[in-house]
Image 1 (cartoon, rainbow, N blue to C red):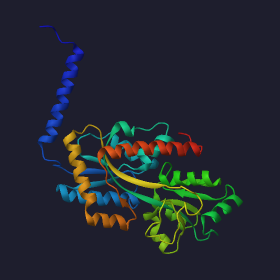
Image 2 (tube, rainbow, N blue to C red):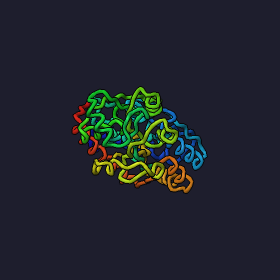
Image 3 (cartoon, rainbow, N blue to C red):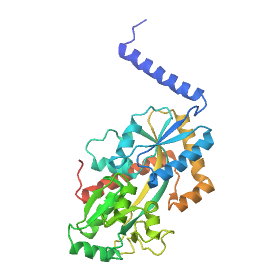
Image 4 (cartoon, rainbow, N blue to C red):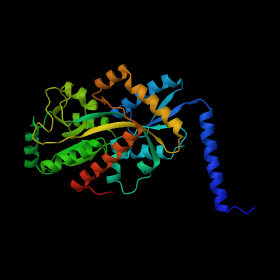
Length: 327
């Protein structure tokens, strides 16, 4: 009998090992211990609120605790890197998002992960529009007035964002490009810090996801100028869209989803998709999402993967148009 080459033996052993791991995972009820749900933004920010809702409902379905693990920093890339290095066994879920899973590739020269390679898509959770706001002391009430004010004071206005590489950052850069204005970026570690400085008057302008800024708008501590979706937000019915305000076709919507480190067997991926979809299709969850100004938008695994590829290409074009280069 001819001898099998060493490489062949190794390949066969690795294949049998992978099968053994998959079989072991599927042979036990899932989950049989707590599951970690990584949110790559700070507690209190919109992504965190969404993550805690998902974690709570999955805990109820599984009868196991799903623990939210906030790993903020660098526009969501710190948390993404941690998730990418986790074992592909189903016990680490990652709340993928527009920042770490689409925009980051255009802004960071050396990421510790490749989202297309290191993650498997489960489902999109939902989308949310942003709002362009100013401190009440800024003498503008419309997009046109803000553009005129910025052009009269080039380089003197600053805008806050929840971090470099986030949708508020790129959304404002897109606005700057289209309006041909010079406004300085101030990056924070998260939306709460950016909001605090805007309310305090340290930063006069911002674009941010609507949920984080809604209380400040309703109490008059911030003035809403325009929303970034193509239709008005139900919670801000008197606030026009950027499109209505003269920037035709302007649209910036953030999104959240569930991803996992690669390596999970197909049956477990299917279970995660089915259970996450069950959460998102529940009427009470939809109601809570609506209250948070988030449109629930579950997808198939394939649809979500394709959506993220398209978003990555789109924001790479926006970054190039704004003159942003990977750092």
